[in-house]
Image (cartoon, rainbow, N blue to C red; front, side):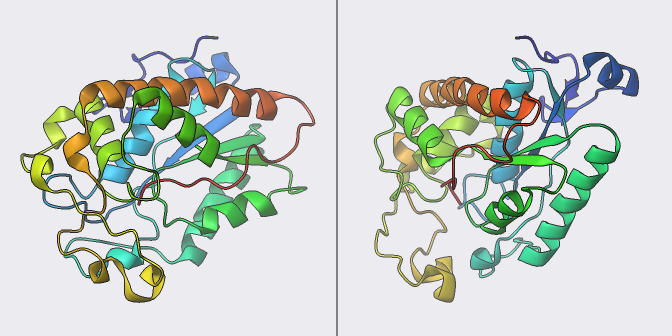
Length: 261
């Protein structure tokens, strides 16, 4: 299958520049919405890291599959990062409403399937949005799911476990080193922090478990791993696209994503 290619994007491929006529000609049955965040990622990654990751995954997907590539949601549920200056959050209720409004608007324009490409693990409410979409007139799925990330980690040779590699670690740093190396500042090589006992994170916030804002091993990141991670995710997306582009298909793909915060 062939998607929109790279001619239809700008800002390093993060934003689509598709025209109305191109949308009409493509007749995509599935829209893809990248959802990121605006939160601290240590001293070496920007506040927009999760948005960049979600947009990069979506860009790679849109180059292969015939999807309607939407611009990103750049602020989401980052309350656990509030102790660091610069972090901005939405309430879960607001994010839920915004995604539902987007889905309803797509349905009115003739696109009845929406896949959320989630780059931030704190967006728990997106699971409910997808769950509640059953029977609503628009089919939804959440990507990547846990099996997709597991397969990508294995293929890329990511050394840190998915649990330990929580935030600004090996995976996120690798994707940026490959796709946007200009965004990675010096210091990731010496910023490792492991905090596997995080049982009260939602109550206490990230600051109770890390001084730097990092939980993971960014020192093990590489551009080669980032490239392999993205290639694996593009392959995994095929199952989601096939499911939601079928007439009368169910409303969701594989369950519950576990993505980096």
